[in-house]
Length: 389
Image (tube, one colour):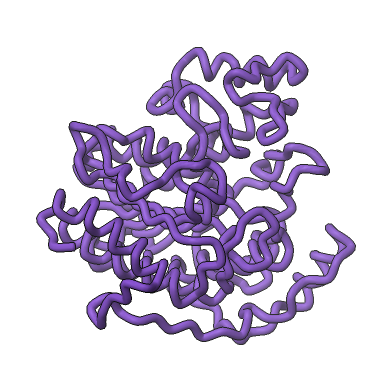
């Protein structure tokens, strides 16, 4: 390895802008990068900008007619094809949409390239993680599925086993769909139960296609899930599957929208639990994949209080320069928050919690809804991997 970690960043990604009334405000990206800089992390990690993904790369996942439709909507937003999810309330069309979506995808694909070729162990693209986009349709604020494209590039380069861990509160449906019948990819998604949240998929019984039984793992958890319950579920499912699957690369998605302040979902997670999940993904990459780790952003609509802090922790973990959770947010960043938003920013890099969880080996409570969800997933998937539920 010629380097330990790389942050993929181009200021142009903040052009992924659906308009002033849309919850996915690109200020969350700008504020994250300013917080990374305020902590001096840009001096602890290589910051690199990649070129936009070209059509041959985008075609690894997306179909040509869809690429044509995105390009047309990018030039003529008022003519966007809503049958393909473009120009809808969720995913409005805007000038330059193709170009900036390809730019975000390019950062994730380049990060995958760097990792596989041995240039770095870890790569982060917090502008990515757009996990809902389908091969032939936009969905859920996502135009191009950079996570799926990065995995497809790893496979193209020769990877035989890639594990994808999705900690966003929404089901990682687009990535699951892209590799439904591909035994080389294990997709694991922890999310709010589909009966209460978009996209309405991700039940335990969704375990992969005929060619890849057990290749999809879904842990739907009830609204109101707490730090302790969420971390228990994560650790009750992921480690054993990674041991059995033996990934060569770990790709993880770190949507911030499970936080208790997020306006679009119903989990009760703290920043502290989300940071611990990022630490676990980093550790699992070292334990199972010789440190090969591509970490992506995702959802997150508490764009000042939550997203910048979580993704700064993510960058710091990848840089092997973790930020003390009790650290104060730098004054320079608080001034940038006010200048950009006319609002005050959070004063600490913590929510003041120190979550602990019960290990699954310590016992199962049949009266507990989260434990029942965990067991349903283990029963649905574990036998496909030669594991006991």
